[in-house]
Image (cartoon, rainbow, N blue to C red; front, side, top):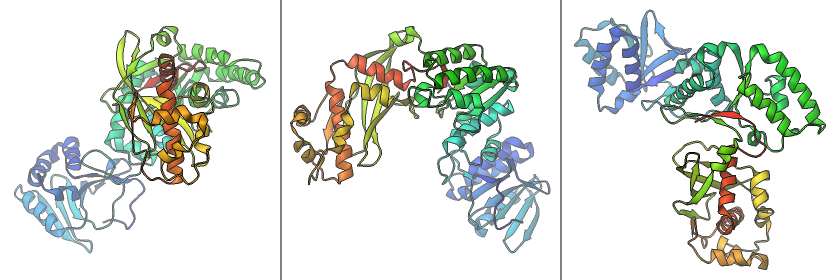
Length: 477
């Protein structure tokens, strides 16, 4: 009946989710599935039922769908058989070494299985006990739809990617795909394009060249955060030739980044070369926006003031800044910047990213070299000071030399413009103290900065990837 090791393409829908699936795809199964759902209502054992899929489709053996009882529970299996027997559904019951296999004339089987299952999607639509997908897997899950020219079924995407995406990711792909074909490339025209993942080094040479860090003024994502590149097939050869000329000149410092950006903009507007960043969409519909250094957009961005005070536990890894902004049409919006260091205690450096508070994924990082370090040059050095035998962040601050006198005075008070400091006096290890010094010092520098309007405008634009050197792209969120 079943092998000891599941096939690579095997997956399962748990409990009511599996029953609903069968009822939806086969009218003959609607009644028995509803009988089971009614019988199992409120019974936690329903989660031991699993509809079996193989290679992206419900598994059919000798014309019937298969539902496992796992872990093996003959008493529960018999109760299901007895309930369905009232509907005169049973065709055959056989006993095997593994246990009973009960076949019903409406077209499905119930049988027991004791082995551990993998690739399970639970009743809440989320993958059960699954690791998070790799970035490449997240991106490929979307790109396969573009290449197919349609939204693929959830199980087919899982099979192609080799990861068991839950319903949350599938809903994201659905919303993103619908937004893409509505606002970027119509579905009927998808066949005219090739689609490449930016993180794939085997992508077209022209894409490797325009994203080569040797010719960019900052990290690639600060210039253009696109995860997917769409290349019009009948323009590919011409694009390659023109990019090669630009690239060779850029390597030799004979053209500026503005020249490359203008090329990207022209081809973007002609829909020959389109860059699209991907974020997990957590709403039913995706918003699609063109991100560019439009003067009207840039001029409209303004900092209005701070929002809710953040209770900053200085022993933790980050602090948030809640702000009120305005952008275009004078629409007020809430925004949040999260600051947190990267690296070990001996090489701590501060980084930041921004997003609306209720949004899941961050819009993007605030450029370290061209924004954070410009406003606060040398600020990271505080993480390298001699902390002696300090046992708390408060003690380490008190032991700082006189150039940090204003910082010491600032930390002597707990409440500030956007943070309220807590746990300064708590005992901490060396790594926590150095990280705490870095975070607390940055919160001080930001709090006392003389021009918050300019500071947060630059932070916001950088998070949105509208740096002075950024290129045009779409954003799906």
